[in-house]
Amino acid sequence: MQYQNLINTPFAHRGLHGPKSGHVENSLTAFKAANARGHGFELDVLLSHDGKAMVYHDVSLNRLTGRSGDIDDFTAQQLSAITLTGSDDVILTLEKILDNIDQKYPVLIEIKGDQGRPDQIAQAVFKDICDYNGPVAVMSFYPGIILWFQKHAPKILRGLVATSINDGEMPEKYFSTPTQKSYIDDLAVDFIAYDIRALPNEVTEYCRGKNIPVLTWTVRTEDLQQKARLYTDNSIYENLD
Image (tube, rainbow, N blue to C red; front, side, top):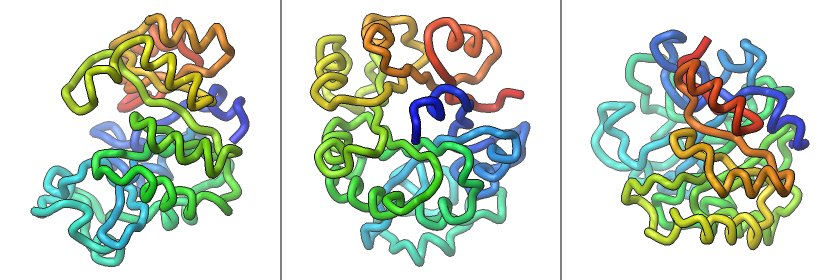
């Protein structure tokens, strides 16, 4: 992905999903709908039991499928038979998603670190994107995942997902301004995706001063879209016209 793809095309958060579109998040239908609008999209990746990169947000299957168990209790083949609630879509591999979208629009891949296997999930994602012909970038809250790409696939654009609002899922030091600045520098990130609730802040201004593109999530209202225009270069939006 070229830098201009990060700032010229809005990104639909988990695809174009929600009540306005009628599509379920992180589904092939939602991604195709975003492309039909002329937009890119953001998606989430977790690992299956057999180490495949699966496009899904939660470790637990319950919220989006009604099934008990976690995503890594099942193989990729088993997951591909599980329907997402309220749709005809199923849980798909990253490879399958990328094979079935319009490759002229950019894709942001948020690599989740919740399963505690940063190298394995980074490798699984890289395997699926290394020969992909469309614009793609990876990003994560987890520095270890970004570090893998810095060391092993430096030509792929990589970004830090960040917030200053502690929800208890990351170590306390992660939320400090000095720590986030050190990640930006030490990992040589190509962009940052910052929580819009925490804008503006010293970290994003630091990035803009270094000509590092600033994206923001999740933009769900027109007021937030105006805020995004003031303080960032592009939006990851949801449920907006």
